[in-house]
Image (cartoon, rainbow over all chains, first blue to last red; front, side, top):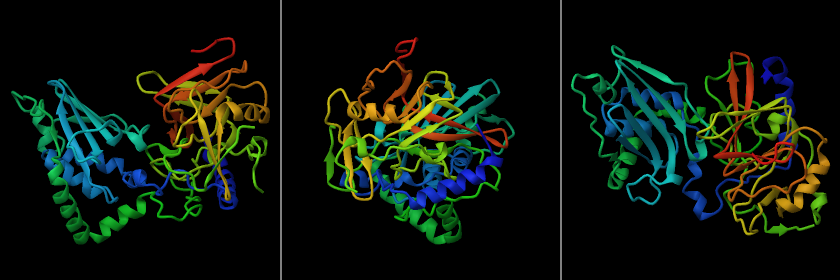
Length: 242
Length: 165
């Protein structure tokens, strides 16, 4: 573990080292196959995502909220399934092949909601490029302000609605993108604030290092790196065996 | 300087947080990061789905990157990016140089995406390695402390008196 007292010197050291270092992109735009996932480098505001799920009136409302939160250019599709009378699994995914189904490599996040008597809980987990993120277990109790998608489970005689999964129709993605563009135009300050919070790099490197540690620790984990390249090498590769 | 031999690859010690791209606040992994090297860690948590996290005390962390195209069967093709070169080396070829560069004794945690689950060459040392993608995280502990976590689909342990686990 590390404490804050030793952080400043570590951070300064890191910033200097990076600015002088030789690291070059290993996972970025460069090959066609990677272009489709480029925006998965955009930070997702997990707190906003959890709130969107809590407040959603239904799957269509949730997918609209998710795409307003997401600052990348791709459209996020969602799948909602009640796996039994107590558990609902919500998956966000980039429907890259536009087949209207959740592909394992298309997953961005999952939300699992469980009902336990008169209480419930849900947790958000990252997937794919976001794997490893887990929100705290968030509790749900009657009386909380919540949307009908969640509130329905507290209704007398509740029956799961999505035993047959709902999935964003591939044909709706265009409408979602259009709706999101309208939202961004109508809420430029909100969108700009989300973009500035995102860690997406638009090509500049090194300068992003140096975020201060004088601020309080964020609630969630900090992402580091994946130790495998998903793109072509920067230069014509030299293969060495000795 | 053009690198023509594995031994010339600049594999050196770095600060742990810098090595694992954990030096600044961000919520998702920096997929542009290509840094490599080794570091001493006070503690690392190995996290995998469906199993309790495993804590490794005072290990050496070796951070490397697998290449996108894997062509060497039973091995991991590593990609080293420098200003001038992209160098591909099989893990089995680089591993002796990596071990020669790090202190003897502590467990080794290998931060390396390992798509085929290839085992590093046996050396008698305890080596924790992953199958699948490895992603680094820094988890808050209380209000002031942090804990380094490496997540992967599966973590395995090789060598030492325990044998593979």
